[in-house]
Image (cartoon, rainbow, N blue to C red):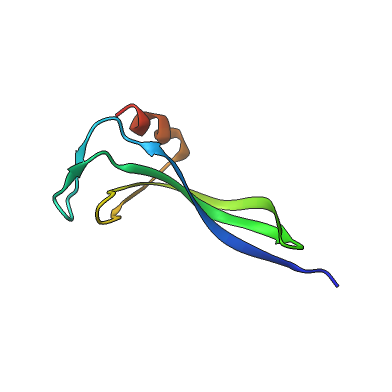
Length: 78
């Protein structure tokens, strides 16, 4: 019997260097840069990540926008 599955994950990559004002909650703070995705598992061992997406999010209300992988360094130095 083969046991397989998948699980979602979220990983914090860092914060913006400067503060950004949120258009939703109006708070001003450094924003979080997040990677999300899923990992294929075989016998409960996560093996292959897939479906990666990157976001820059307000730390207060968790609203933000999806960004491309190439934009991460721009936001880390922003």
